[in-house]
Structures are given as structure tokens and as C-alpha cells.
Length: 461
Figure 1 (tube, rainbow, N blue to C red):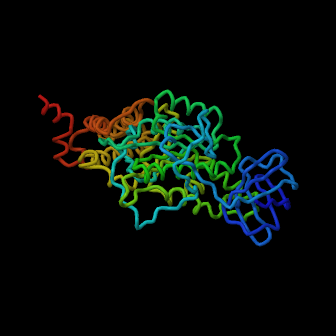
Figure 2: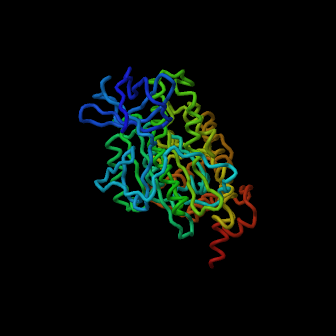
Figure 3: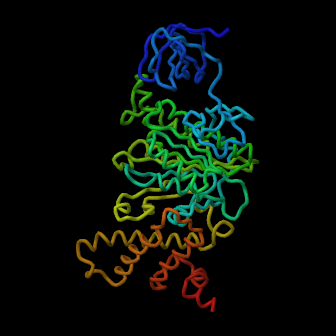
């Protein structure tokens, strides 16, 4: 018979403190009864005298007379192939009106980072259909590539577009998307679901929705449930999985809230000192395991408070992940979508997933040349604002004009526009063709003779 304890000494926010218990384990599941109501919780801290329990559904209605029982088990995610196409809550319960998941397996959601010795180096290209990602900051299968955004910017639209369009180029392998939304409004949730259903993307997706009015504790569970699902699909069912989080800032705010409730000594800007470790435990579960056919690729999205890239959340994420995609408020004000600024953006694994056998042999050279003249054009904008455009040299005027065309034709695209990597490279060549051939100093002559529109059109004739 399960023991029940009525020794709650304190209720603080989402936490309760229980004394005089049997030995219990970290992350152990707990049930709390008040009258006819049953709430679930999880052991957060355990000592000789006090057990700290976080309550998933919130502590409303609980009192010191509530009965606490320890189950001896941890939270497990029910998994089966039928989970693909489902919409679940942030705690893994169905939100789509469908039945509960009948599990083939039950997996502990805590998981573990992939052993570095077991990792396979990421090499395969993933096409998102977004030129600024595919062309200049390429996503590679098994990579962790976050999107750094700001309040009011269209990062959620970009997340949905990537979820719809992402594919393994030229392969018929199984591909799935796991979409974890944390701390979003009900309006945003409806927008996400409507888009998934309208485009048919839900057929290959698993959606976890944690709303802003859901308990903060559930927000901490959501990415772990998503990752456990991803590991099952990738390493049990041999699928290639892209997992998208939005918004990791809400996740970190929940960590800070829980830390304050536990009266922990705060770290930078009030966030827990262990936030780096916690984020690393999530991010490092992505990758490819030697001997396994599947893979997990992560696209975490986070909003930078005050657009501050030195804020602890983007700062720590940048240390752990392999680059970042930066959303620009300046480009957004110009009406450009997606407003991705390629200058501070970076994909550290790009070279592993491009070139002959992956995309095309001229990919790196075209990307470098586009980046160089766009960066120079942006610098010249500042100079032209001071001395006037008429004071610039003819070459500088060409580069300045190139930067404007680059934003309008390469960066800017429709929300439903799915560009192949070859279309992206062609747009790049069309832009470079407006410059004198002698200015293409970063591209080998053999690629110019093969792909430059001037020679390509001659070859067709």
C-alpha cells in the first residue's frame, strides 16, 4: 500500500515542502490529493529533512492537509509511430481531441547528452527553402543552429516556414518535424495549428503546445518531452528529425521563476547559476550516433530581451550551439521578410554540408562573394549618409547598389516561397552578374565560366 504524508510545511509558488518522508529520488513522480482532486508533481530537491516538490498543475487549492504520496517512478513519455501527426500539450497530453497515445515504449524524459565518442560528424545538407539560411548560413543534419530574434519580430512565421519546407535534399528518407512551443498565447497557438493543418505539414509533425497561462513547471518539461520523442523517431525508427523550439527565452524565464521559488542564490541577471548546464543538457541531445541511420537537428528560437545579444540566454546558447541566425529589426522595418541579417549570422558546420556531393561546387565561393559585397555595401551606407552618394567612387556606387538589390532579391521572399538551393544560387549569380567580372575576386574562374549568366546563356545557345 502506498504511504501518504500529510506533512506539508510550506507552499511557495509552484512548490511545496514536505518533511519526515521516506528516502525519495530526484525527479520522482508525486501525487497530491486534496478532497477529490488529484495533482501531479515531481521531486526537485531532497535532503534528510525536507523534500521539495514542483507541482505541474499549480498549487491552487492545496493546503497543509493535502496528502502526498511518492510513486517511485519518473516521468515517462508514451511513444509509438502513431505519435506523428498529433498535437499534444506541454505535458504530453492530447490537445487535438484524439485518444491517448497507446505506447510501444515508455521513455524517461530526462535523457542524456550524446556521448562525444559516439557522435558522427554532421555532413548532410538540410534544405529549408530560405535563401539566407541555405545559401549563406547552411543548416547541416545533426546541427544545433539557433535563431536569435527580438520582441515583435516574425521569428514564429520563420519557424512555421522552416517546419513546412525543411527536407533532406535528393533523398527519400523519412523526415519528421517536432515543434515545441513554450509560453505562447492562445492566439499564437491557434495560428500555429491553423498553419500546420492548412499546409498539410501536420502529417509529418509532432506538435507540443505550452500556453502562457499553463504552469511554469510544464514549460520546463516541454523541450524534454520533444527531445525524447525525437530520440525515439530518430534512433528507433531511423527517421531524420528537425526539432524547433519557440521560445527558449520563456523556458529560461521558467527556470528563473523556479529558482526564485526555491530561494536559490541567483546568477547573472537573476537566472540560475546552472542555466548553462541545463541548456547544454537540451542542446547536446541533438546529433548523429555512429551506427544509427536517424539524426536529430535542432532549431532553437529565442527572443533577446532588449535586443541584447550579450544577455545570458543568447550568450550561453551561443557557447553551446554551432552558430546562430540573427533576425534584424532594421530589415524588418524595411518590410523585408525574412529579416535575416547574414553579417552577424554564422553556421559553423556549413562547410561540412555544402559543395560537390551535397549542394553544388560553387556554393562556398558564391556565398563568400555575396557576403563580402553586402558587408561592404552596408559600410558604404554609413559613409554615403555623411559625405553624400555623389562623393563615392563608381565602384563604391556599384557595391552600394548591390547591397540594396541583395536585400530585395536574395533576402526578401514570400512566406510561402520554397526556394531550392539551386534557385538560391542562381539568384546569387544574377546579383553578381550586375558587377564587373573583374570584381568577382572570391570566385574561381572555372566557376565563373560555368555558372555566370553571361557564359551560361552562351552555352545554352
